[in-house]
Image (cartoon, rainbow, N blue to C red; front, side, top):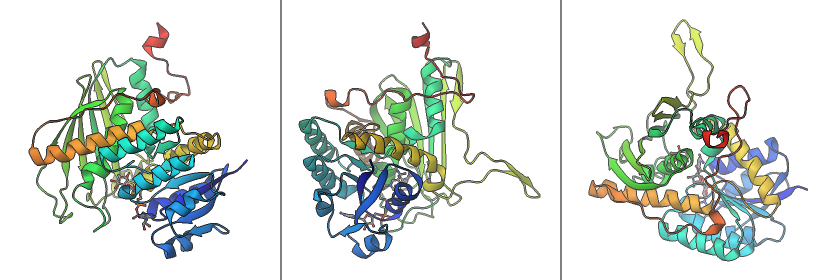
Length: 356
Ligand SMILES: NC(=O)c1ccc[n+]([C@@H]2O[C@H](COP(=O)([O-])OP(=O)(O)OC[C@H]3O[C@@H](n4cnc5c(N)ncnc54)[C@H](O)[C@@H]3O)[C@@H](O)[C@H]2O)c1
Ligand SMILES: O[C@H]1[C@H](O)[C@@H](O)[C@H](O)[C@@H](O)[C@H]1O
């Protein structure tokens, strides 16, 4: 059976997900689109897809079985609440929402509905390199993690649309989420330091250095640069008691020629995470077809939003800001579990806990 999907927000990533659902993956069909820019929605709608004037109309349409939200962050709350009210599985691009209060409203609605419907677009969890890094940490062979160095560089961000708060409440959410997931831990405090401002991002606070204090005492340092010019550069290294583990640079092909030895750098998130997005949607289609959601949840979106809120306070105050989470509803009890992973040679990696 083919899942009938409606896509809200047909900008950069909306178009990429329409391509993915239409041309790459099986099991889903984009039958409806909507955007506040109706002309854009009409221009990119797959053949035969309906173009709805509003997101609400698309969500409530009887033919749409599941929804993909790719509108801007501040629009997500209302659209998510409409999906939950309609009982429809929904994939929502990050950030889940832009305030902790909004995240709580979405969580309360989903908990009251009684079944998971929301998957958040934290695609790093579906990336094969991050999955191998997590499997290595979970195996225990390197001892306990002590520090995680996370580098998050964008070549550029859309001028005018990407504002000074967004390094902390739009971009940092990826690092916050992947830190929680890799380390099986929660963020308990956030510090932010602002170095010399890059002249390339004229009005932006860019770059920023964020320090996440994890519950176990692990420290995560995050470099956020959003106008680094040369490409989309995502790095990660975990220092443990008995060794370190790091992400490889992608694409991995090493070129040697008259100019020297080099690796290409992806232009943006599309190139670096193309396979992760594909896998993210493979898993989403499977769960949505069963009327539910797996993967990063509203709880994970809420956790990342709290980190963003704390980071915005920390950058103003210059002080460590605490992150206090509410109790986790039982609906979200399993979301930090690792997916099945193998090491590079294809052998299943088992944790010390499992071996003993
Ligand atoms: N996971 C990732 O790596 C990743 C990458 C890029 C973008 N994103 C997220 O995806 C979302 C969209 O980003 P983008 O880069 O495609 O932005 P974009 O500006 O290219 O596209 C956003 C689209 O949403 C439309 N829109 C805005 N408000 C709307 C509303 N209320 N109803 C319907 N349509 C509305 C806009 O008209 C625009 O066409 C953002 O939340 C962003 O953070 C995630
Ligand atoms: O919306 C995008 C996207 O989430 C990218 O993955 C991130 O690197 C960018 O900073 C952000 O603006």
